[in-house]
Image (cartoon, rainbow, N blue to C red; front, side, top):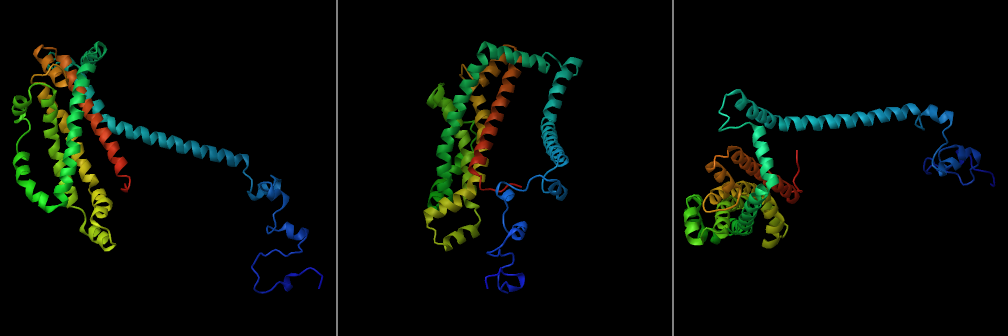
Length: 328
């Protein structure tokens, strides 16, 4: 009975690979019992291990290096191709703008080459005039745009969610939303004067409508099945609005916010052309009246750059608040 168990004496129900209690060197030779090499991090790189492929050979390391390097090169090429595709149209437009005035297709007096416009833009930047006008327009635009978000989003959520609020406000909203903001600019000037309040309120009025209408649409077009499922799970009105309706309406709300961001810059130009002493709109008009055509185009390019920055910032914010969405 004191002898070691043999293979035939192992019980039939024992787990396969179980280690006998009295195993010796033969047991350690199997993979069942860790050897000294296994406890210290694996088999030593013997010729037999290299032959089995357990230890990477210099050829394996070289293959892996070239594989990683190839993947990095492929990623860089793909990124470069994407960059070229997205900037090729702008580069083509810039080339046309530079060439056509120089070969006489268009009058260089009224449409100067792009190089002259960029030189005028640099001179305005160095002199500090461009920074002053840019700051004035940015403050007015952001102020009116921010007020529009703070007011239009809650009102739109209330109109889209509660029927009595919609019935009460809809007639007034339908009346004013069909009235052009530019047509009301003289009214704002008469009531608020030529100072900053009239320009900020003008931007606020023009930006409110895209945000308000898209917010109402986003709330009303939430999938009814989602609402029914949430109610069947016992969610109250507040939790239903917080967990289901508002997240589902976020993409549509941000569509309105992005439209309002572009609108805030466009309508501001009209306000700055009437009674303003600073701003990109004032710069464009003053350069036109003074026949400084390169400066006029420099102001137009700056306005386009400001609109692009607005859009990129709003896209980043939208991705931040829509992280739950899956992208294809």
